[in-house]
Length: 334
Image (tube, rainbow, N blue to C red):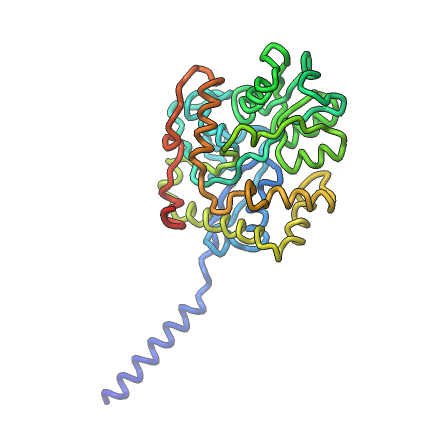
């Protein structure tokens, strides 16, 4: 009798386990992500292609922004959950130094580090030296955010004063690239691989921003008000993004990564894709392997913003603009 009872219970448990095994998995939670268009999005493209986000419980709906104003204001309005942009943008708007009017007390914070910027100062074909820029126009995304201060610092270090050039707004890197090629401006900051495709079409690289030292370029940010109720999703994004980074750095995947670049990047050729791969995925200076924020790089952002930002502020504490909680829950403390 007891044996029959135990046998029946075992069969019931086995049936229940079989039912659980056959139950459909919960669908991944969609995340609305906004970013600037460019090769620095390789980890996202790869993670989408390989299903790394889905295997971590989320799916990414990627939208490209025309400029930083739209990116920041749309995220603060709740149209997007996560953004990928230059760290300077987040600092600027948190400090009330951004170009657009936003609600008081914004709650953006950075939680992931993407790269060191991949920035270079690039000029039109006819301009081959900094001295030739006097009286010319330099395009920026926005006058007070992004690479605007980086451009001003590079120009200053090369003998060009604020009065020597005229700054004009031209949107994100992709748009500035197109307008520089069209002859609408004379110089701008470009990010790899736009500098490579630009050189192929006659543009001149006058300086690389790495000469300024550590710099936090791309960062991922969210609103604290959203993140508080979406910890699982934020951790899933971090893990999916890092899996994408690991995959693109696997040299066995090089040909596929180059094909992804060609598919996503305007004017990209197979030969340029090889160059872009070598720069974007360099062992030193490439896309950030551990996706951690670079505190020294953020300090450089703060130094430039302290020097050029208005209203004038002395900014010194990187931790004011980041929250490492989610990174540490995803990967452990560094």
